Amino acid sequence: MTNEQTIEKLNDALTQLIEAYEILLEKNDNLKNEIEVKSDNINDLENKLSDLNGTTEVQSNKMDGMLNRIQSLLGSPSDTTKEISDEKEEEIDLRIQSESDLEPELDFLDEKEEDNSNESKIDLGRMESLLNGLNTK
Image (cartoon, rainbow, N blue to C red):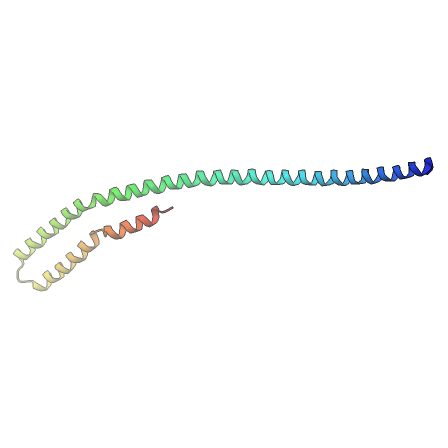
């Protein structure tokens, strides 16, 4: 082998090495770009997650506040409902005493009293089941 042939083979080998190195550098740059894109996506997702967690906490606090208000309202109307029904009973008793000859009107008043008492009563069991359905997360 002559010097020219050796130099030629070394030149070919170096050319192949340089081309392979350029290909590897290009792949490395592509991988770095992909890593940056994925890192940006991760940051965006983390920001969205923190926003959602904050929103969920705010909504949870609002729901808890509303549920507490509803529960406090459910506890107090029984007294006022009882007072209203007592007043209606007294009113009906007075009418019965003063107008004993108007039987059809009394029947109508009794039906009206039943309707009003049914409207003024709160179905606590149904309300509790509705509240429990809202309270699940």
